[in-house]
Image (cartoon, rainbow, N blue to C red; front, side, top):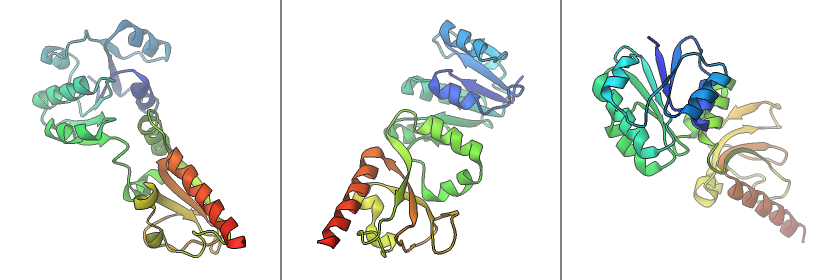
Length: 233
């Protein structure tokens, strides 16, 4: 029996499997194509189910003894039903599930999912631990940002722009641009990235690191350039 069972070997499942100890986890696939691909990638512990999610099949692969179940099926409804079935069989197991739809989050919670990985769950407070673990950062980036336009982006603070000399709380990046400030390289101190834990003052030459939509990042940069031109007039 395996401590960790990964369900699904689509692009989300592949991203997860790359960061797990192959000796400790089992992959469950739902078609021959996924089975063949998993074997080609060197995964030896692979089981194939048909399209049904049956309690007896889950019990056969050791879900009652497993410690962690990772639900990465591409179909949202089936993924949630899988999580619910697992929780009914094993009340103590930790369940991790990926969701692309924020409307499903409450349903996943009701289904007994312990941790939901989605683009809405990334906040500045959680980045603290992520930045300290590069493997975790890559893991999160691959399975959260794969299916949308969210990016980690660097924004260079231009001299005489509307960001130069202002405090983050005054700029209200989340309200005005839907961007979450994560860290900053403060040139007055050093060249190291520091987490943003308070109302930080921005100065020309600083580098602001944000999470958000590509379009909003580009819009912020363009408006910053425009403000410099306006200041020179």
